[in-house]
Length: 233
Image 1 (tube, rainbow, N blue to C red):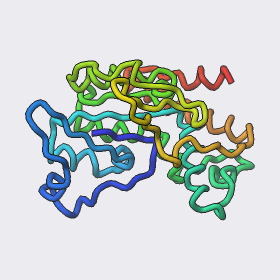
Image 2: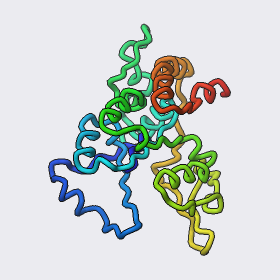
Image 3: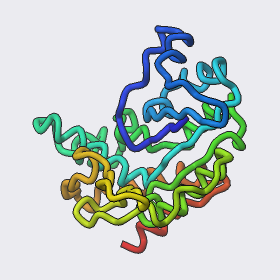
Image 4: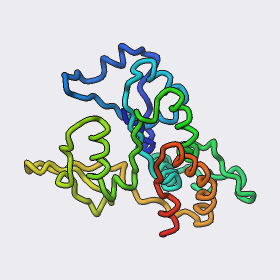
């Protein structure tokens, strides 16, 4: 199950019951793995308990990226659907003069990964959770996919030859080297140009997220180097 933090899709309706959920999944033969991707699971308080009660041995994959970039991307997606919304700078603060970040705004709150992970670790051991770097999925998709395949106990079938970098979109696309079918790229909702954000606002957000990022690194045992990434810019 992929608990991606990069999108905004809604989760399936829990009220329909476990059997309904199982029925909408594709039939799985012996030796096959069924996967589902729903970004809202990771930030939904009830999700860990519900998933554990249904399938406690489920393996979980969480795709994370720099929370500042994630927040701006989230806003960009909403802006494309609702161009009348206030600016990012307005929405990001409770009081900009005092520098008070509005952590209740979903675009900001989702990026507090340590807070959400704490909830999941009450039900699932760290050994059942794989954290995938959204940045490395762009710069080294084959490397990240190797980790995913190892985690799921699969042969490393997806390799470097299955990817090519799309300069227009700014991220890799999937191709099948054994045939001439058209490459598969993410849809139009991905790869949008971000609006220009006040550098002071970005600086304040980096300071806001830093302690939460450090806590997340400690909890996962992985350093995603988001602070290093920002200092290189």
